[in-house]
Image (tube, rainbow, N blue to C red; front, side, top):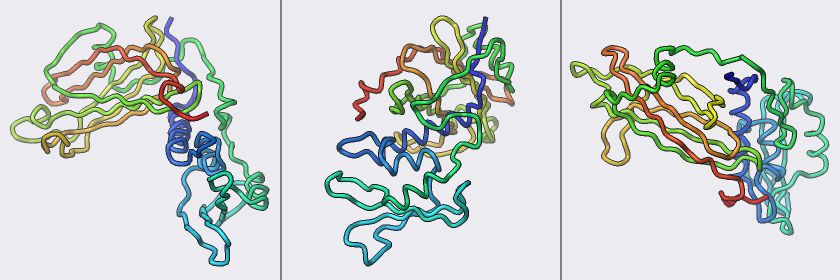
Length: 268
């Protein structure tokens, strides 16, 4: 029986993107970024509209001020201050701003917003809606076709002890994605991540439609990017794309091993 995670993956993925960004940008010598004051607020409220450095000339030490247009529970034109504290070698919230942040309503939706409280609700027989059924069929039948050439790059980013963000970048060289000298506007893509047992963990329909210069040889390529938060372990990755005009397709079936939080060398 195929099962799917019955929650909004866009919301879930955005949450983990914030956690990863906080880990990468706000980590201190003592704490992982998501556990610092700036990291926690970034995860809960998202990126500020603007950031001022040393915005208070009278302050005896360094300060950052984050500006938000609106935070539910606090109001409009919110300013949150962080003071640099030498003994922590980090920016921390003064008591007044900590009290103000505590008045916010960061979780209007039913999905938890702290890594420690995340629970994945698994529901039977609720497969996600698939737009590109013909591409999904190539995965189900395990047909290997390489008429459309493309490359993929997989990177991993530590989010929490239970979850790693799998970052998938796909490029289709424009020599492949042309017909009669015309570059296709976009290429449909189907991506599926599943456990070796066959349990489908995540599926996504997207399109490669932004032409950029490939860094290796400066040739044009259509690109697409996908982030998938999963638990560490072994997975089967399937990527399928198609030239909508000619019907030519390309299929990649491979296995990836998602590393643990500790093996990625991230602080607690």
